[in-house]
Structure formats: structure tokens, C-alpha cells
View (cartoon, rainbow, N blue to C red):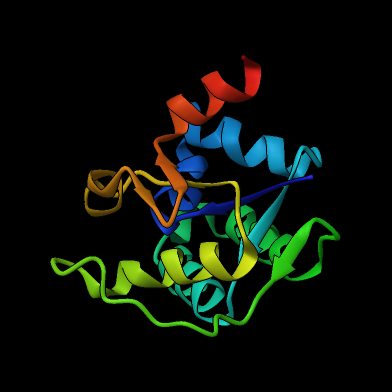
Length: 134
């Protein structure tokens, strides 16, 4: 099973459709394991709580993240300072390394600028979908 880290930008953007929605639907359908940390779940929750008009869908999503069998909760053993412009992005890199993830899917410019981290590709939703459907 592929192991994928999905940044908050993609997760929240899925609420509004497009490629991010398709990425999350692939996870819902069991095509990959979503790798998270406690810190990532906390960020997902905090950001999703800002979207009152989609709160039911956001609550279902958070419930799935904490209960779904294809979620891997990892505890990073290494800390990185790789994204100088936004150090909070480092948690996605730490998760990916700890989980030995296959890919990080991101809509965040700081992460996408890296291109990869420790051999783990960092791609946007469209590129992820192209590779998946390949």
C-alpha cells in the first residue's frame, strides 16, 4: 500500500472540489494510506474549524482521519529545519521520513519548492493524480 502525506492545504482545498477532492477521494476509497502525526491532525482540525459553512463535511473528514484503517499515525524521531520561510511545514517532512512515505502531496509553495526531501518526492495534487492514473 502506498504511503502518502497530504498537507493541510490539499486537505482543506478538497472541500471545494477539483484535484484536491480527487486526492482525498482516492484515500477514502482505500487506494493509499494517509500518514499523519498528532501535530498534523491538530493542524487539520484547527484549520478545518474555520470553515463553518462546510463544518459537517469537515467533521466527517476529521472523524475518518482518526478512525479509518488506512491512516498511519507516526511519531517522528527526527526534527528538521528545512523550510526556513515557514517552519511549521517541517512537520510534513518529519512525518514523511518517519512513515517512509512514498510521496508528499502539497499545495504549499514552500514545500513544492523543495521538489523532494530525503528522496521523497513532493508533488502537487494534479501531478499526484497523473502518476496515480498513469
